Structures are given as structure tokens and as C-alpha cells.
Image (cartoon, rainbow, N blue to C red; front, side, top):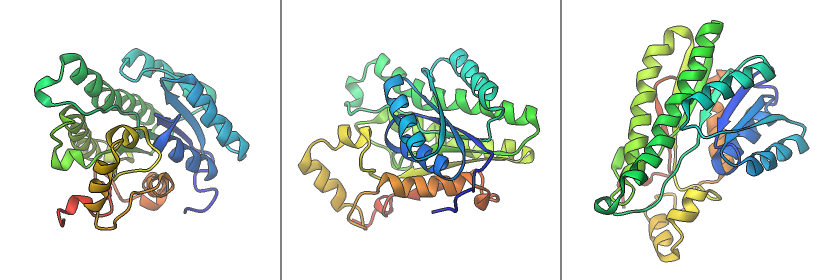
Length: 257
């Protein structure tokens, strides 16, 4: 864990901040001193996450929106700046996924996932990037990736394709925005406990056990572990790291099974 005060005076925007990995990262950022703007589609989840942060003495605001709507994203980032004076960090965590055979996937299913994962990440990233450039301030952006972007995934082609786009976006922006002092990285967690994605994709116990058996460390990762690495990458301790991908999947992507 980083020391308290690491993010004092900073403002961080977290998409999908009402649950799962996003909520965990938001909570850790707040613990470390940041004011956190929680973005997501469900106001009730965001309010619950804010209450949890405030109970521990942190600061947070709630901003319901659909990140597929570019105008809504621009308005929301402007509202965060109006409320808190600045944005220094962005975590693109919002996502969507479900299993479907590729030949049976509908155009709406494809568009819904690509719209959230790829388009939504771009909308938020460009909006925050423009704010940082206009301010003449450094900052850091962290995208939450997936091992699917490196390996492919037969029954989640839409999500794998979108996450692959996010991975390349990260590298491209790391090069483009480095001269402005803006760092862009991607964190690729493995099977993370307490997330909606795991609950949906690993609902079958037999399938879940088989997937965990493929992990060299023979266990899943906790949200707390993911949040610790995420905040490191966002912090000044990683000030010379940009355009890169950090994989924390217990060795699952090594193909050693």
C-alpha cells in the first residue's frame, strides 16, 4: 500500500465506480487523499460507494451517466471540474460483457459492448486529456484491461475486440501525450473476486474450478490487490511509466498449464 497523502490535493475520476474493481480503486484513492468523482449508470450504486468512502473520512461526488453518450461525458467532466476545480487522474473501469457464440451475436450486442468498453473509454479519456492539456498540467490515466485482449476469447469476441482496442489506444496515447506530462497505462487483472463479470462468466462451479486450475498461483485475485497496483500506476511513484500494460493474472496468460 502507498502512504496516506500520496494523492492529497488531487481529483480522480473513476468510471464504473459504484461496484467491483472501480469501487475498490475509488476507495483506495480516497484513502490516499484524493477527491474522487464516481461515474456510472446506476445512481444507487454510486451513492452507496460514496457513503462508504465518506464513512472512512474520504471525499467523493456522484455523477450518473452513460459513458457511451459523448455529450453527457463532456458535460460530466465539466461538472467535476466546476465542483472540484480540476481533474488529475482518470480510471476507465466501466465495461460490459456476456458469453455468446460469435455466429449468434446480434448487431446490438456487439454495439452495446463496443460502445461501453471502447467508445466510452475514448470519450472519457479525450475529455480528461483535453482538460489536462488546456490546464498545462500533468496527469495520469489508467485503463482496466483484460487478458482477452492478448489471447482472444471464443465466446466473448465483442469484449475481447474492445479491450484489444483499449490496449492499442493506451500505447498510442502514451506516445502522443507524453510531451504534455500525461501518462496513460493499462492494468490487466485476472479473475477478480467480487465483480459482476466474474459472477456472470464463472457462474458454473465446475467451469470456475477448471479456470482457476489453469492459474499457476492457483487462486483468484482480490479487489484490494488490484486497487493497490492501480493506485501505484496512477501515482507519481510510477512517474516514468507510460504506454505500457501490467498484467496481474497469477500467471494465467503464460500458457503453462
